[in-house]
Image 1 (spheres, each protein chain N blue to C red):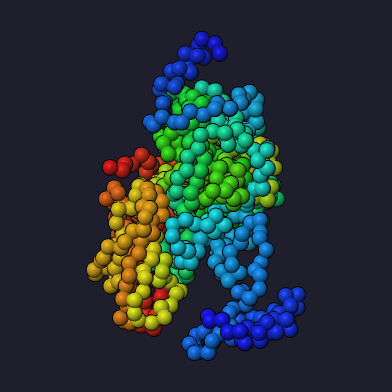
Image 2 (image 1 turned 180 degrees about the vertical axis):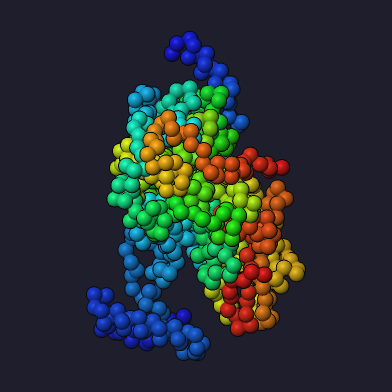
Length: 426
Length: 178
């Protein structure tokens, strides 16, 4: 916007008269003027516009902790909880409004069984006992002195995408269907280091992890995972864990269903057998058509979805569009993501953004020239084990529709001729 | 550490060494007395390990259930805003299966363990062990698994065989990455 001394003079007068930040009418006039400026810019008028108001006066002061722009206030988690028990519920990550692979900490999905405890770290300790050489207790300040490791990995609730078991496709933004999955950089102490300090008895086969929340949520974890890539996380995306993500200590089991990544971790019990806790028997098990149920189905299998364009969005018109989406696998790195714009008749390889990390969100992209006719968009991921994400009918043929957990089928979005995007089974 | 303990510790280290060597920590863990552990340890295993003293019957549990559970779980364990606990009629192989304690839960120990650690939602850990046993008995009776006057305690609870005890197949361990 070119500088015009005359216009600027007028603008300054305007400012003095009407832009008193303490005056409500001044605020309204300011906003109105902003709209006029925008209108002029859109009309492409040849008249030289004055600089925008944020270039003609000092900006806001510095702040102790930055917040998103007020223009982004629609980018929030979608909360769904039992009205009788507001701490027992879920909130979805708005995947369709985010880019890249890292989920902002404040938008990481939540699943709490009885609210978010407000824990004073000075009074929080990790107890390790059971079939150990010696039972030990660790304070948070002590754990902060241990060797740490960082890794980027996703966490996905076992119940993510469960609306897709329904007979009819749910019409909702992508994040409200598939957003019980988020990806962060987690930093903490390898669990193996702490177990090594305690020593393990030869008959120790399972590790029962318990949180210090009002549900005392607990699950049983096979020892080989605990001694593998398990992390006692203290940090998320560079800062200490958020309360709703387990502050001050969370168990991170890369690639395994969310419920095993126990938040507010305070007790680890080595045992010969699993506890058969409620959340590994009555819940987080998948009923099959045979009447049998899959239990201890820890690994989140390969999955992908197109986040843009996706359900509820509208394409402004034919022409070149950028398809963007996420793929992940609990078994390792994503090797390939294919995208179809004709409902699965033909597929093209999408480009994978670096870094492509194991058990981590991977961003894929594909430019698409839309001719304006109805189209069905799909993506399918293949991981480093060679496993490919199944079509919905294949998954249902194998699992039935009562499994509730571990839905990882291909997602289809229909683009109508007028540009609206809806969720379809295709 | 006695020589026996030392030998045991050495054996343990060898027997269960991590697959990849863990980074060495500063060894700041503080030893725990057995009393400090038992104060925290609320895990109950299917074989009854971890069950506390005390007992209760379904008849005793009804009063506790009506006062503290029915508001969310409904009268007799069904029809409330929370989980259906009893009254399941549809088979697990049906189009709309009922997954109640009687039709789905594989172990009776889980009922006691979950009540004691998590319930009631607005006041977890407020029930005495006797009350938790009694509510467990009430729910097992509501599902037709035990009689109204059968005492449920550390000895009787692990002996109960649940109707769906054989209904689960472990998905782990399974295929490994190449």
